[in-house]
Length: 223
Image (cartoon, rainbow, N blue to C red; front, side, top):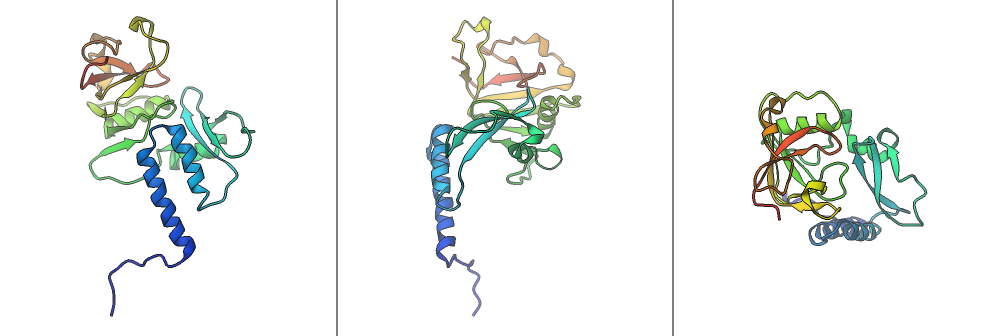
């Protein structure tokens, strides 16, 4: 008699790998900060694979380099804190085939979601339509922009904005709430808006590491 049930893991090591995957998924949900998550990820991964150290790097578009953010295992890192993207293993992975973002899971609605913005110190997940995604990639790669229609993106968990002198705030970054981002052909009409994110309405922000503007529409006022 045939069975449609999927084959179940039947060996100790294979069962242990499944158990580790479940533990990793649990960590992703319940650890509030990246350093805490990374520390426990390293400990959990040791149950399934052997390694001397593990590190986490983010792309910095201002220097076109991978910047070391977190390190677990062994003594202090013996590698530079910043490595050109083309000379870094993490840079090769980040760029993916042909310099494009690496796809984690395919969708079918024309939108792309990123776990964070490359090169920023905070977790800033966002989703972008095709127009905004191409604008985003061209801007941080310093390529010519080709925006032929309105593009949209959103950040339902908000984002972090550097304080500026006109905000009369502390020197650190501060968090802005959920918002929608809009890009328009040739930046038409953007000069009519303020650049102060603490204003009572829409404002102008710029792609990280560039002077390229886009419109931000808050879903509620920034404190």
